[in-house]
Image (cartoon, rainbow over all chains, first blue to last red; front, side):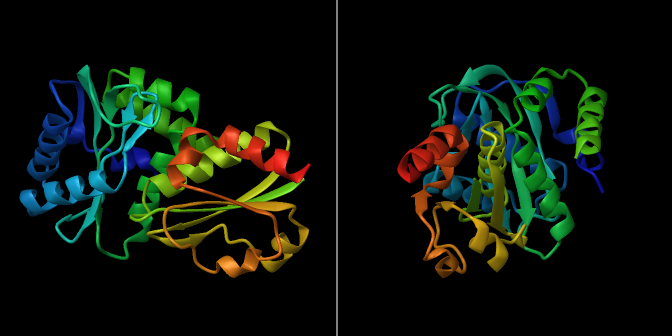
Length: 153
Length: 102
């Protein structure tokens, strides 16, 4: 199992239009729902907002990782979404967000996929990896990037 | 010098691992030996052993929740920070720890 295999093209977008953080959370939540990853849209979005009130998911360098672990998630999934315009977000470095990796995690003991989500988050700390991901313009480019990261480890 | 760390957050799928990865990266850059235990949704990984504790010089706890088995570190100098601080400024945290150990 590697992260590249988990990429769902329905959850990848290189030019997502959103004016606000709310647009992003609702829009990408809907994307998760439409892709069949989530069984109850409202419950999922409520979960995302609950998470946001606990603490900031704007992890710096323009990246946000809103996430929700809930029984309404059918299978672990993540979005790779480049925003057309940066949006305001409570971020650790005060910079607006232009790349959103939304994570959906089921309430199961499916550790393999949860570990993939965790590894994806951990990789974002690597400056080279993060910048390459943000500048990628095709799914193939992203898959190659994930595969090369895996070989390094 | 051997630095230990434990990271944890309420959901345990993202921040825990970003914090761990960042602490490890910054500690290695400074030439320190480092081991970071993650307490996330998939359980405890890279668990710190008794031998690690015996050998270690200090520990960094980066967590917004009460960590499991924290009493292991009772005899070690400990720096406690929020998990997001370790994502934002692991370098600063390690510097602070090194300064305190002087």
